[in-house]
Length: 215
Image 1 (cartoon, rainbow, N blue to C red):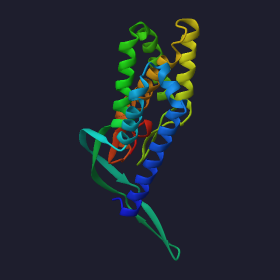
Image 2 (cartoon, rainbow, N blue to C red; image 1 turned 135 degrees about the vertical axis):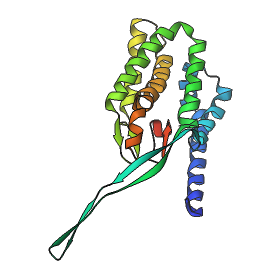
Image 3 (cartoon, one colour; image 1 turned 30 degrees about the horizontal axis):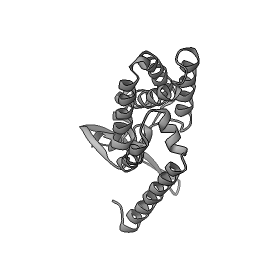
């Protein structure tokens, strides 16, 4: 449950981010990057705003019951040790997809693939490599979700984009990097770890929440 002062602080934080995005678009830092992807500047602010607000929205896909086991405890009372056994209880786990962290980036990736269909083989290869890489570095954290190091996936996506640009398609690095980085991270961290959800003990597992399964 969020209390009113906390909600107000979140609202102020998002206003700050919106203002920062607008400023960066005006000076051309963000618009330059998205122009390389072929996204018109007139829809750029709306797209970023939707991504920002959409990060607060999780769309439920499936609910199932998991068994959670709480560990036992040993209490020392003046030299006497008492063992308290662990307990088992059922918990509802909801699989959801995050609007800003998964749906919007997937739609952008589909747009890029449809606009540059000649890059589809390279995007598929880069996405496969990205999926394996992210799956290798992703770690399940009980009560939280599937976590990955923050900087490694984007660095790997950039490296793959530059690699395929140098050997096959000059100028294609931004398209390949964005598409493979988005799809590969979602596949490697989220979809390839679906079987581990039951052991995480998280009430909500969000695909694309914070970039991975976010409890």
